[in-house]
Length: 102
Image (cartoon, rainbow, N blue to C red; front, top):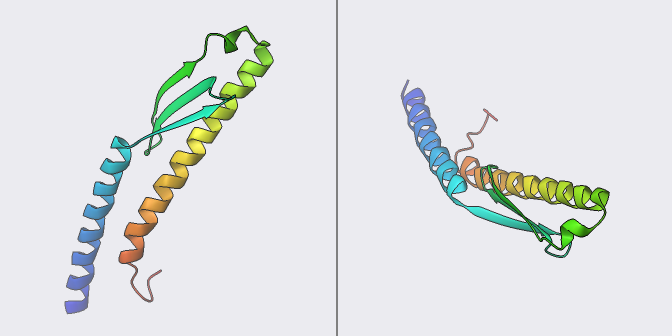
């Protein structure tokens, strides 16, 4: 049963590390721009959208172009936040891999 106790301690340590990384990701902010900087999206590393800024001059463009550029910026922001989160979580979980379990 000593193996089980060690496993539980390792799992608790991993859980604390994951929680810490989640807090750090929530505090981290990414800024993504599209359309030559006409559209700016701020998103946390945890994937929470924080702001959307549009250049007033850009709004004079065709509405389809504006809509597509905004959509592209949002998709790019989401993808970057997910990639950052996955990268940081992989760093934590790699430390706690147990042979024969995963």
